[in-house]
Length: 415
Image (cartoon, rainbow, N blue to C red; front, side, top):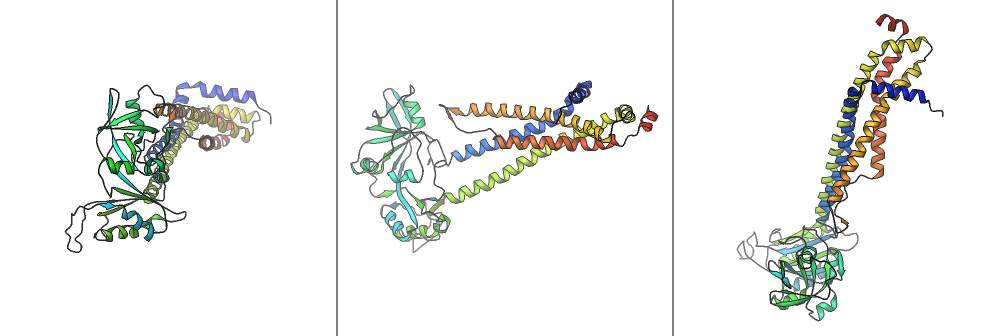
């Protein structure tokens, strides 16, 4: 295929003959493509940031905790405060065999941790090693709580990212060092960089200090109490089908109405993830609708301007036809001008959009870790380029067909 340099020089000369008009026409396409790329990349980044609030959570997990009852049951008034205990764990395991992991948790809101002359506000969680299968920790230094910590009631802890930053501003591995909480010293065995706050249980994300649950029972005189039970289903099990059975198992053991959904709260993460997926499917549809609509408006502007250009060049096109130019040549010339204008403006929009998204991504990077990726992928950019090319052809089609219909005698009469 031979490249006609003269044709492209003529296209460039035509587009630069009226620079202001070409710039304003191309700006519509530029803005449409920029909006499309920025909305797609921004939507992707926002989705990732929202998903980080639930990062590490097993999608087939459930959380069970006690709240004041909302129904009268067997002589007990509504509003009764009650507490789950360790026996509930075995009851759930026996009566709901479809569950894989069932583990207890204890919480303590408030308090301060001290290291040297530094202090920071924290919340404490007492957990077992199995909890890592329900919500995966992001261990930056050291390790997570293990079985030996539980069996030996070791005074060890895993600290969150914010707690680590506040107590150790100079950085470095803090494992082996001791921090004081209240009047008790705990040895740090790990640093969890997980900053998801969907399940921070009343404390700021990254401020939790994780203790072996047996130690927390002993140190804070919690006895047989359990604040929350976390569970995951076996492979292929739909947790929403087990929620009522779990609620009934716990409720009957504590004389609570089995239909009291608030009194025995079973939070199903599966429903939450489905809701997020549905939400972002709608957001993605809206993004493409707005982006393509803006791009189409720009393409219509290009078509209108090309129509004006054809009208201004009626005499020129007539002379071309008179000296032997075929309709196909005229068609190719007008469509090529439209495509060049659209592609230059569109590719500039893509580059500008990628640059803005890169700045957003750099602003969401901490400690070399990207918190959210705002960039569009290669295939999305390629699709945008193909859409631009198609818009260029369509924008130039109507003006090109009009140019083809011009006859030399009509052009001379117009002159």
